[in-house]
Length: 166
Image (cartoon, rainbow, N blue to C red; front, top):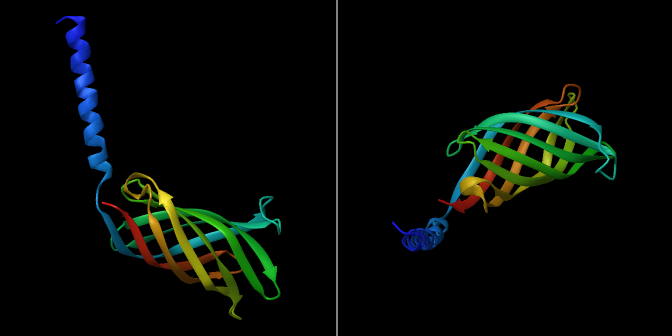
């Protein structure tokens, strides 16, 4: 096979691949419920990125009927406001069982319950993207739960919707 024929064959393959790539990215958009129930552990400490200089680092795991088992980790800024704690500028990464990630922002308040815990109030999350099929995912919702003030251990439930290419 001469060099000219080889170049033509390679060019043909590359041209063919360029026409099939958009077909893969043209997968249909789907919107599904997102209901993740799980456990968390958060540690508060110094965070220079926060105006209050107080931030939280959280880790946890849970499950969703569609995603299966998920693990998550995140960071937020915490501002004491009287008896309330306002958390803002939260960024969380959800790791699915398939190895894909979903990124979200979150904020809300932690309200003392009187028994050494705080309950999450007016807490919301907004999905900002991810990896794999969640590359340009969007959506969001609310989350509820509670957390022990002394240990940082708690429960969480995210309820909302996610839109992604299937």
